[in-house]
Amino acid sequence: MKNLSQFLLLLLLVSCQAGSSDSPSPGSGVGGSTARFTISGNTLYTISNTTMQSYNISVSSDPKPGGKTALGTGIETIFPYRGNLFIGTQTGMLIYNTTTPNSPQRIGFYSHIQSCDPVVAQGNYAYVTLRSGTPCRNASINSLDVVDISNLSSPKLIKSYPMTNPHGLGVDGTVLFVGEGEAGLRVMDISDPANVRQLQYFDSTRAFDVIPYKKQLLVTGPDGIYQYSYADMKQLKLLSKIPVQP
Image (cartoon, rainbow, N blue to C red; front, side, top):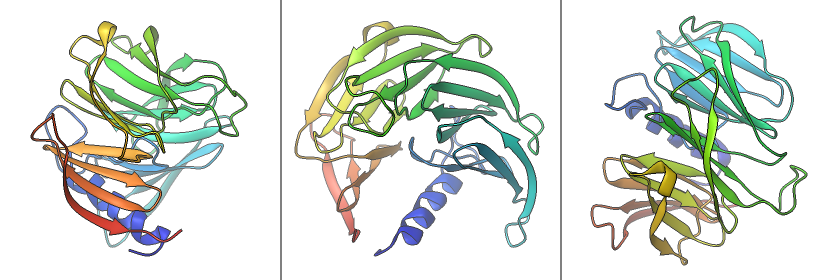
């Protein structure tokens, strides 16, 4: 793999094959937390800095453009979960319902200070990372926010945890993986979202984004895509590496 298009294709294949709900289902997506496109059911959603475009992909060989939704400004990431889309922006997290796939409806918003914020969700909680050293205007915040989404129309911050320089993140059951960029990879216990604790810290694994699925972890780093097994939580086992040229 030597270019961005091949990298995006790999993530799309992962999204098509994995499930984003509690139990995997065809047509759902668990793309990376920093992704700018995702699949939910038979619909592909892509985001720009200001809008979201839908495509009907029920016939994969003949995708049909659907509606375009204005989102505001500073739109960064999109993540699907239980028929909803969690959209990370520079000022917060937007929540859209996809009951009408071609025209998602906004149902909630979680606001934070201006910062870049990838987001993933599981159960009644969403997990958001904020980091410094980006064009998102905040130079000091590096944290993991745990947000109660039991009421989607009124998300509430449960607790914020300090991080080093968090980028992407991924969740599997009671385990949360946080890519700290050049600073490494954190494995967190989220069995109690109000008391998240670190299980392991791998300072030699440079991680920009992560996708955990069935005890295998796909990690994107500065020089390639890595696949690890986390069957043994005490030791990540490298399974493969695909170099990526800048």
